[in-house]
Image 1: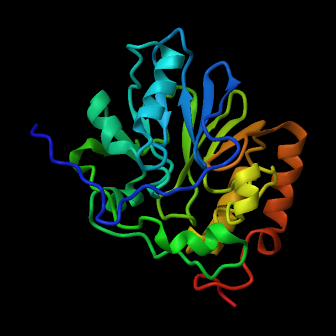
Image 2: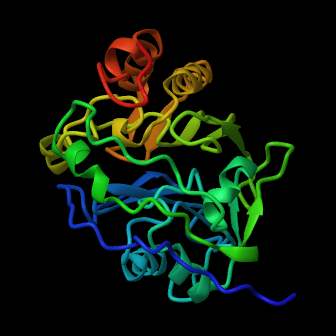
Length: 283
């Protein structure tokens, strides 16, 4: 099969943001490693000795070398993921995906409803810089928003809920932040890779992003167009009673802190997560 050319959107560019955790890697479990790339997290899932692993999400623009280095450090110089699984297609989760796909020659998997944003057909709703919360929100109008085109390099996640090359995990549709947003859950030990369905840092606040001050928060406000669906997604994840959560932004959260924080978020989402005003907020 002939490979289609891939491309980023016309507005693709590096975004000069950072945090205290930039470049920091953390082994959350023997087979779950999380690394912060500027302000967003990528996850490597699989045991280092097995060399059978996947990459979840693809970081910020221009971070391919950093992601490849992190992968080789954990899995050896011949370490190559079997696939890239995307929680969703926002710029900070697909920022280096073209370079990674070319380097490793591997497939990408995403939810069916996310494919238009990954095959050049549809742009996400414009970021909303008017939501309250801080400087990152105000800067969001400069974030890349046009769709990337992965051509036939992207495939739909299996309809039975399984996740390719991630035995024991299942994908859960958690829309709101984007239409095809998914989170990945392992029933065996309660491990949850959340994406941006909720995060553990107040992502709108430049100070909190810089310091990585940990607190549970709804999805990043400036890029969330459907708050009703977001609330339902948080309730769905809370009902799983996860033992640990690796989120798209912020440090991993575990145990009692996660349980109580997530319960509070599910119960008081309208107060904690939904902005008081903004173009996607219903009154």
